[in-house]
Amino acid sequence: MLRVLGLTLLLTLSGYAIAEPIADTHSEMSGCESCHVDSEPSADLDYENGACVECHGFLKEFADETHQKHFEILACSDCHLAHDEANPNDSCAKCH
View 1: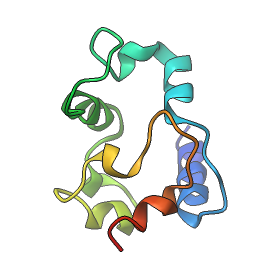
View 2 (view 1 turned 135 degrees about the vertical axis):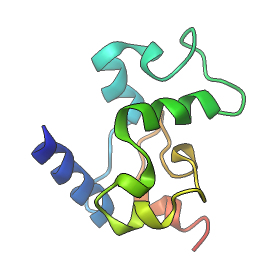
View 3 (view 1 turned 45 degrees about the vertical axis):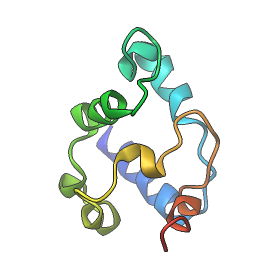
View 4 (view 1 turned 30 degrees about the vertical axis):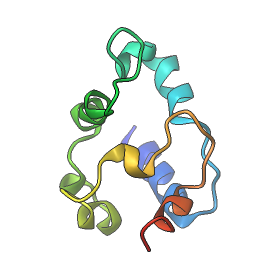
């Protein structure tokens, strides 16, 4: 499991992979409730970002420097678009 997660992270950060929507993979595991209260997004996405941290940990705990540098600066949803196919590197262009 950790090898798969590491490889996925490496490919995602390298920009070589266009990721399928995060929502697709998460809903396959445990439904919309894995990220949302009553299957509906919250207005400010605080609940959803908390769900990310609950499963994946805080950004400072990630092995890669990119996530660590953004701890307490960005929320998961600032870069990861849960319901869209996206190249994660496109999120960087918003600020950099």
